[in-house]
Image 1: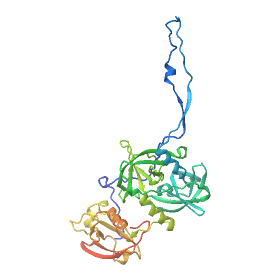
Image 2: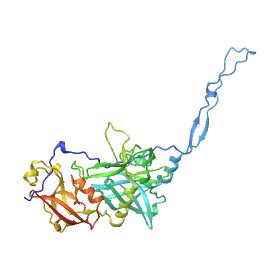
Image 3: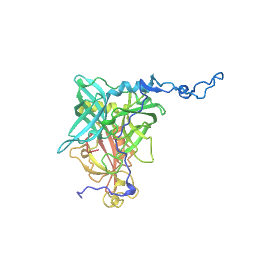
Length: 396
């Protein structure tokens, strides 16, 4: 049979993925605010009544309002000042008669090397762009090149001419964070009219794992490791900075839960996840991850009748991933895997679905490593050894 198995569109099997896009900004107290100072005594005082002088008319004296300069500074304002000029707007231009903006987000200038400055943003912000423009803190707009992009972590690296850059953000260590620490988000919510918006909150939780649908098929493809914050995050903040009280970037704002009944739940990719991805993207334009060389589907994506009819599975096998196609010359082909094989374990660790398989490949093993694969073919359990290759965009 040559046709590939297509996922069943069954509402009971749909798992809503959480899409990327977010970023937020944090309201910091302004430095050097000048405000009217109201002298309440002057406003409310009346002319004193002298018992020795009888007056038929009472006079009210109102003192003039004066202006005083109040200096408001804090750790938050200091932190924002350090990094705000390194937070930029990202404008995705696409061909539509002419070059028209199709979306916008935020980015962070994190490196200046020679004649080039590097900016981190979200993959979904620059996806399908024909051109990219960067809006700097001084309101200048410059063209940018996409150095590399990674859909899995929703990160991308852009480059611009270094002559436009004076401020570079510094990364902090996200592994040292604890729930309750201050968190400050900076970005461009709702486009360039609100650029440089700052919002303040806390780290609500560390080491969160959030299900993500990478290809829009309403199936969970991956669990993203994120920081949770209650700092306000709005559309356009995606790719912006989440910083600590020292002004260090501890995360890249990426997603929020957009439901009317939910408030104050936003997510950022931790700096310790971001940094190695940026290094790979700078060097090769992609992230090197192990791959089998197959396209797969989870058993729960297809009608159970096909488990026996097409995949020939025993009735007691209810979890795993089926092989939809095998790339020519791939590690999977060399290991003898075929279309409609059902993988149930890697290195004796159970594979429940595609997310579980990717979790093992991307977190537990390395390119070039030989692994043991347990699978079913025509109702019989078999094993094979496979030496992992390097990842491609459309294969696992």
